[in-house]
Length: 363
Image 1 (cartoon, helix red, strand yellow):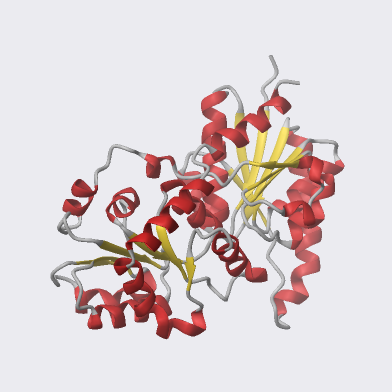
Image 2: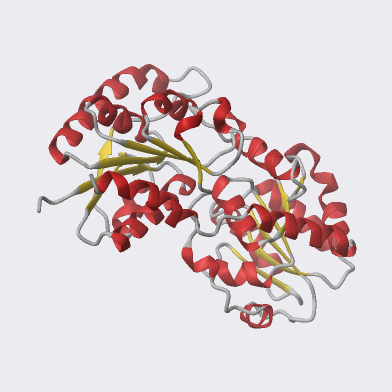
């Protein structure tokens, strides 16, 4: 039997890379004989993360368009032509049974080239408001796997499948008790826990708001605080060793942090929201205003509309302390947020997506 090939593209940020790797892993588990390779942007983080996950990757000379006039914008047409040409060569050489795109700069040229050559393409759209690349690719796609309802405004309705976003499998372990998780962080299991994270790089505004809350905190609420690498020097040392506080630049055991937490404060990236919903966590979301097309604010709004999260805008962080304290004093509200989030969760999203990819391998 001829070797079947699958090409996956997703990158630029962890929100595109980790779903792509999760899909590849689940597909490999279902079909061990399939050869899976990746295509990414040559100067982005996928060039390190994907090989570390065990998959080969080819880089394209591609980047996004800046919001202001820059030299990079002048180079964009040349990068696009170069990437389309190279993507076309990759697809012709590999002859994949299907090409999968989870977003990022490189997925556009790759999926466009594949569709032009008659190769089935699958789009995995993580956000409640799709980016311009996926909007343009949608008419050519074979299947569009989405995480939010209402995307028929931008995608052909007959191609949409509501699957949810892939979730890191390690987060879904149901054998971690709050007591054991709290013990891991040196916290008391009989007291409530707030978990704050601004992502791996961190968010200065969230860190400052957390510092201010902590300085005013007269309650028995404990804190797990991931400051991110960029802000560790400013926030970690002054708070390490304080009673009821665990603080560090990074958290390696996110499953334990979630298990310990009664309330989570986080950005509103699509993957983060999928994790919080699957785990059923009461959450305060602080959308990043810096992401393309204001995706995070729109993602957060979709949860707020369903009573599944509270949003504090980046420009209104003076309300952060009161919002946190409200969730710990209003048990009914906290429980309702967690319940509503859980109702939106799709913990089997990765497997569902793979089930929609397998038919292209079975032709």
